[in-house]
Image (cartoon, rainbow, N blue to C red; front, top):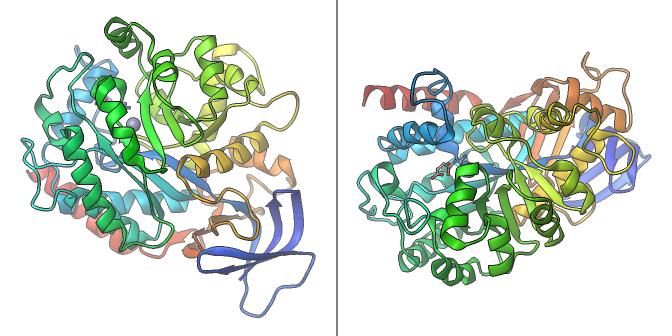
Length: 451
Ligand code: NGQ
Ligand code: ZN
């Protein structure tokens, strides 16, 4: 049971709110009552966000790709380094790194993660004895940390647009559709042993890593679950797809795939006005990763166009170079201000930017992960985060202004408590498994460096 001095409910802000949970879900929400004995007392209670896009292993590359040298200045040269890095990664290292990432996510205020997972095979491309060995490692990390997992095994068949062959580090990703179906079967077998809020979806990596026929054949394998795909992140990708398929990536997708509310196009950075409106109206959730998009030099999202068309959105930490819920939302808005030479861009009409971004990312992120969460109301998963409203960054703020303080002024450590489907993993700002997970992470990084 949780007793909050203030809580953000679907109807708005409320005071003295008691939330009871049962089986990972919110059982009741009572407003204006008193705390019960043994209640966890918190100050500000919010629906916790989903982190809708993560490649956990990339966390261990943070700080290793920021030196400028000739041939090291683009997304594509970053990707070369990333491929070399992952080519040494062993299953136990994958697990240790993912556990660290999930601890950091929960401490930052994310209750769940969409793990967009493509390192399936051994270096060189041979399958592990258990085809889903690496997925099982991701699940073990989720189980150890208690984060809510939406696992998104990736279909990655080709090395580039026009069915180019896989090369180098990409060999670890490779599956044809038949191999992918086998992988999914094994993944679902492992997932059956996980907590009930675990979700399995699919992720055709990008249009360049699949082809029209394979994409059509793979989509039914989602079986009603989420479908995530990288799209239009870099200008070169837009050019390559336009040359190959005769249309820009988002135009092509809208014309050739049944894009709807189960879909989460990741990045969607380089879109025309018509693509922006069309994709927004499809009901798909834009999977925005503002910190990584800044780090990789992708460009700013067309926020005003997306919002004008009523588009849903959520945020993810993608490369995990930095894991911070507040920085994702902050960077999203600041990317718009820097481009438009304007203030308070991401809100329809008039109103609080922090409140619009937070509420939108809460419901959009949950939708993208196939998670019945994003609002504090009976029946939903208990994905909850508590903040210290007395923190210097927040004291004196209330109502939606508190969310403006959170998004624009607060450090991560305003988070005091976090529950993932009712699992109370962060208390007094610290994840319960932090010490053991940090030790495992340090050992994994040392092992990678020694290799
Ligand atoms: C990824 N990252 O899947 O991690 C990609 C690079 C690729 C971003 N698109 C790999 N930011 O494109 O093949
Ligand atoms: Zn990605």
